[in-house]
Amino acid sequence: MAKTATPNRIRGTQDIFGDDQRRFAHVVEAFERVRKLYCFQRVELPVFEATGVFARSLGETTDVVSKEMYTFEDRGGDSITLRPEFTAGIARAFLTEGWQQYTPLKIVTHGPLFRYERPQKGRYRQFHQIDAEIIGADEPAADVELLVFADQLIRELGISDGVTLQLNTLGDTETREAWRAALIAHFEAHRGDLSEDSLARLDKNPMRILDSKDPRDRPIADSAPGIDAYLTSEAGAFFESVTKGLDAAGVAWTRNDTLVRGLDYYRHTAFEFVTDRLGAQGTVLGGGRYDGLIESLGGNPTAGVGWAAGIERLAMLVDEPTVEAPLAIVADKPEFVAEAWSIAARLRRHGIATTMAYRGNAKRGSELARKSGASGILYVRSPKVLTGADIHLTYFGQDDAGLWSTAYAVSQALGVDGFYRGTTR
Image (cartoon, rainbow, N blue to C red; front, side, top):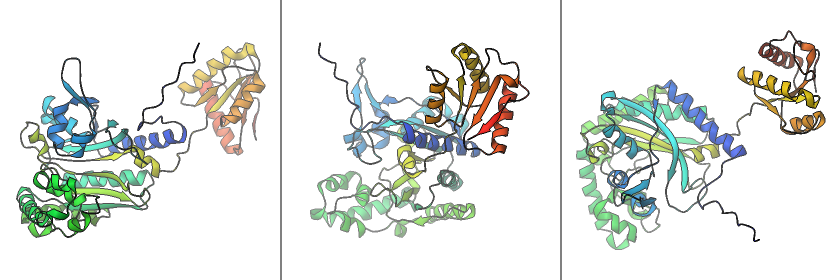
C-alpha cells in the first residue's frame, strides 16, 4: 500500500515553536502588561467580516483591497473576507455593538491577520499583530497617550536602541484638500515619467504616490510640495500640542514630512516607529488619526486614533527570554509513581513548575531531567510522603541560599517540615 503523502505547510504561513515561540509570547505578554498600565480594555473580534467592511474602510484602490485580501463566497452566497487588519473590524463593532456609550473608548486586541502578498523576512500571508485604539476622542492628548503607550512597550521589550519615532501631520480637511490639489498639479506635470501604478493612483489617491518604491517615481515624489505650506492654524496647533505632549512625557521623535496615509479619512497625526535592524522592512509599529473612518461605515462623525505592530517583526528584535527551569519529579521505584504524580499536582497548584517523565526507571528519569534543562530533581522514595525524610532534593548550579529557598517553597507546598537532604551540583 502506497504511503500517504503528508501535506506541506501553506506558503506564507508558519509553525511557531521553541525560541521563536518564546519571543512571540514575550511580545504578547509585554503588550498585555503595558496596556493594563494605560487602562485599555481587551476586545476579541471575528477573524472574518463581510467584505464591505474592508472594501469601504480601506478603499477600493488600495493594494490590500485590490490585490491582497482573502475573499470568498460562503455557502449562503455572502462575500466574506479574512481580516487583513484590525481597525475596520473595530469600527464596525463600535457601530453595531453600541460601544458609542463608552466613548472615549480605549481598547486593544491582538491575533492573526491575512494578506495574500509575497512572503519575505518578517512578512507572512498569515501574520499576527497587536493593536491599540482610542475612539471618540478628538483631542491631541489621545494621540499623545497612544504614542507614549507604544514607546513604553518598545522599552519594556528591550528594543528601543536603534528604534526611532517618526512623526508627521496630515492636517485637517481643509489642509488635505489644498495639499491634494497641489500634489495633483505636481504629478500631472510629470505624468509621462510616472510608473503605471502611480498613474492609476493619480486621480483617485495621489498621496500614495509619495510612498511609492518604484525608482521611476522617487525623484518626482521627493520634489513634491510638502504639507506645511498648506497647514491651517488649527491643524498646526493640533500638531504642536502632540509634539509638546511627547516632549513632556520624555518620548523622543523626529519629523518626517514625507510620511503619509493615503486614505481620505486620515487626519492630523501619522507616525511610525522604525528600526535600522530589519533592512528594508524597517517599520515595527505604525498608525495615525482616522477621524473619518466611522463615518465611512455609516456612523456619525467620530474621532479615532490607533496603531498596530507586527508581532513577528517585534519578536525578531527581542533577545530570547529567560525560561523558568522546572523542577523534575522522579520516582525511585515504579511503585512510587502514583505518589510522584500526587506531589507534582500539589506543587503545580502552589505555582511551582514541575515536569515528569512518562516512562523509564529512576536512572532514565534523571537523565531526561538533566537534558530537559530542569533546575533540579525531587526524588520520591516512599509510597506515601508523610515527612521530609521521604523525599530527596537535588539542585543543579545553585548556591546554598538558592537551594534552601526552593526547598522551603517545596516543603510549604507539600506540608512537610523539611528534607532529609538537599545538595547542589
